[in-house]
Image (cartoon, rainbow, N blue to C red):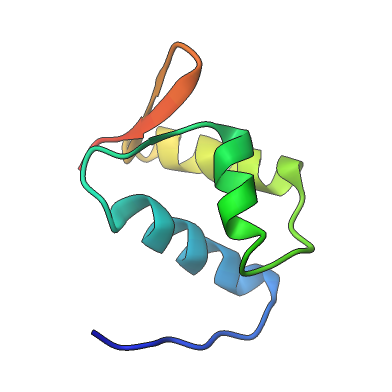
Amino acid sequence: MCKVILEKDNQNIDFIIYNLLFAKSNYCFTTDHLLDEIRNYDAQVSRQTIQVKIDTLINEGLVRQKVGVYCTTV
């Protein structure tokens, strides 16, 4: 296990989201829950940015949308 230190910028938000979502198998989340978790790392991120990132993961087949939640597919 290693600790990764990132500077807070928009490039790293993808890395943060990917690691939060895929560190656990069969992880289900809401946009608000994910936003709360991400704000521990980057307080400046907006809800709209998170939603765009989730939509991208859905389009790539990595996340499925269910009623009221999203779930990882891996």
